[in-house]
Amino acid sequence: MKSKFAALLFFVFASACMIGHAAARDLADIKKAGVLRHLGVPYANFVTGDGQGLDVEVMQLFAKEIGVKYLYVKTSWKDVIPDLTGKQVESDGDNVKITGEAPIRGDVIANGLTILPWRQKVLDFSAPTFPTQVWLVAGPQSSIKPIVPSGSIDGDIAAMKRSLAGKKILGKNKTCLDPKLYFLEDANAVTSLFEGDLNELAPAVISGVADATLLDVPDALVALDKWPDQIKILGPISRQQEMAVAFSKDMPELRQAFAVFLKKIWQDGTYTAMVTKYYPDVFGYYPDFFTLK
Image (cartoon, rainbow, N blue to C red):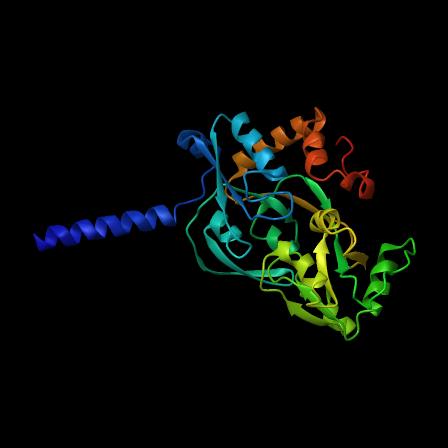
């Protein structure tokens, strides 16, 4: 009896391990299962956390396009890549290393994920879906003054960095707002890694936690809409970047199906209408990005 019980326990444990560390599902597997699992971190207006958001609507429409149900799987910036790839990763600048395994919980990442060199080593990205850039943003009490635009993005970045000596600047590790990516310490800035959510960075500088914070364009646009008289855009810290939907590297068929879908909704105006709903002001900052491709 004991041997049968032990064998049963081993079977249950082994089955759980196989499920937890199963290979990523490609398009045929997703269609067979009948559901697309959308990994999303609540962030800006891409995933609002209440069933709304630009990327939520895009993924819902994509699931319908491939004939399956849609399932939102909430995750975090720390876990989102392991949840997709089954691999724990550690980034260091443009480099990345695999540090262990993790359960696979979803099929696609869509939450305003910036394309970064280290992420490209562990993920495959769709065509760019949204323009972005890292700006320095401050509260009304900050002594840092906005730069005077020079007409040169590199000149503007250099001017912005020259004003940061001795200033406390917030950033977020393992995201596109990691201060290491922009060499702020070389500008003698005092960088601090924020422990809260990205959505809390703007309120933090409004309350005086730091002199300024790194914010990317989508979150800055949301912050400007929420607190128009309480934050100020100081200037750029990066050149223009791009966001996209991310796939595991062993999911080429799903990525190709999304490429066809994205081109379709881009050309028929569906995507522009979605962007207008959640980010109406972005067209004024990046008018060329949303032209037909």
